[in-house]
Amino acid sequence: MGALLLILLLLILLPCLLLIASQWKIFTKAEKPGWACLIPIYSGIVLLEVIKKPTWWIFMFFIPLVNIYFAIVAVNELSKAFGKSTGFTLGLIFLPFIFYPILAFGSAQYVYIQTSEVNEIGTPQV
Image (tube, rainbow, N blue to C red):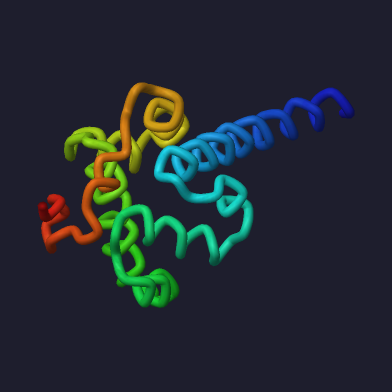
């Protein structure tokens, strides 16, 4: 019984630690504090800063059904912020344990750093 409990704990704990480490590195690449990923609502605010969206969007994540749309847009903007395509966005949504570490520890560079504003479709304004 103890071995089964240990295996279940590892199956839950290891993916969580992987995603925390990935988000920490993503924030660091975007020149934000990595520790921000550990604080629930603040991490959402920092994510919105990374993707150059207004802070009031954080409230949209608390409205049922509307939050699904805003979460998908946020993930899409995150992939675009690192120069990735919509296909990579689908990977972030459906296979996060694979694609978030690729984004964090791979060669992706934060491209929104050159601009202070991003237009509605997510491309940087020069």
